[in-house]
Length: 352
Image (cartoon, rainbow, N blue to C red; front, side, top):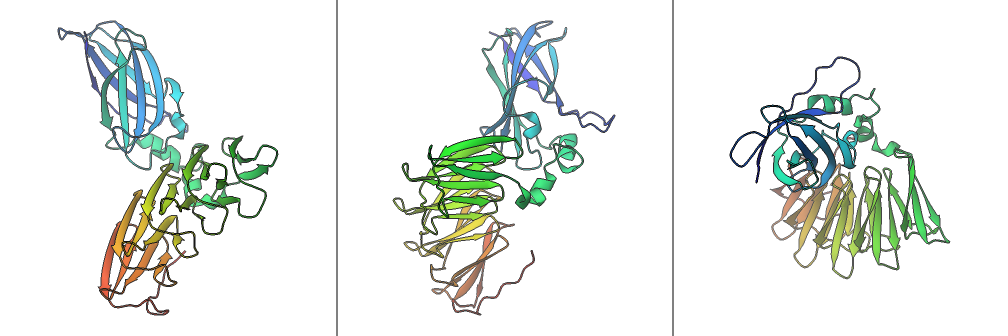
């Protein structure tokens, strides 16, 4: 039985040319059961980059076969192994926390043992610089700033009963059962598309960033059942009495009691969504950045009770006579005496 220890070292290469190296260095030491290093041995490593948590979504995985030195030390460059999941260049280092998971087989095979998971407390500078420098082909900054300038296309194939989306970034077509040639059956938003599959009772969203389709029970071809905003989508599931939001950044669906298919029950603003839960007399806001729902007493399904601007929302609570504002940046509600549900009592002002 061998004991394996690892130490993560992020030694970003000095810029020697205009090309940013798509890798960062890693060191690990393998010890045997008696505590002696595995000197000059052949070992196999499996390295994964995880999103948000130590058990989060696997963004990228690669494998390495290395020979330890006389002290049992292994040096490798993460990003230069044999990829098995995702692409290293496709990782957005500028958003969310990243974790590195390392697994090892000290015999050099594929019987991997988890060595440990370490959070990247500061992301590799050169890799982030690569993403924000629009001169590089891998830069994502331009897409983040002008997301509405995607040039993707969706078509309905009536003979197959499928909707196909062409993703200009990957230069590929991707198909999914559902949709129709009728107005409202294919809903676009910032390069993403949503279609309703009537045979399954599901709404499917094509995410251009991940090049995948993601399904959720609920939705309909009727007006109000699928609401788009900044590449995200909200659907109402009448059987559960829930509104589900697809977050394109996290590539996940998140549900909350409340909402309706009727106009005004799902209110979109800058990628965020607000719904009224009549059983609780609460308004819930889904915040795309935090991927969470936040509730506050007050609001209504009537016009004027919930208003949105630049991802923020305002509601009037008639029971305590207060106006409450949801601030998307702080992810909090803030209340103040005054206001009304009547037109003109709550006035908004913002910029585009």
